[in-house]
Image 1 (cartoon, rainbow, N blue to C red):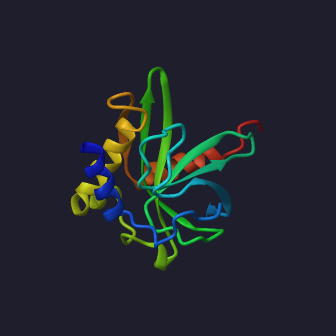
Image 2: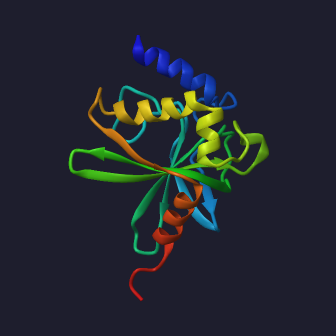
Image 3: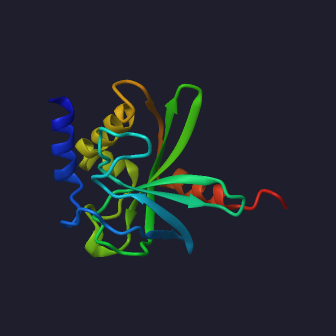
Length: 169
């Protein structure tokens, strides 16, 4: 019952323009490609029972490392998508920490919400923030992971910039 309510709320908040199986695409930030792994409504990473309410992409740097980016928006079968990072957080899974950037799409027709900073997002759309938090706290099973260290747009943009900087100079 609990997951059913979460999924209904997720599909209401993060609808996907009616596409059930979108083609793989790319999103970009500062002309860097983010490879889309899954769309809203599809499983996130190794979760086989709980569909993600967000578009999941991975940004790759020159060293081959990856940074996970979750996009709050409609996915209408596009190949490229400019993003606006507005928050970041970490998922703790045992001893492993994974950084996640939360972003809005820049294409107007793909927006669910207008661009805003994290504080504004939480005040105006607290149910969406709670849904994101609950999803990532339970995508591997109830209480198997924890969501910590929510940060604002400036911290999310800095995280991307630091991630993209060449490390071997």
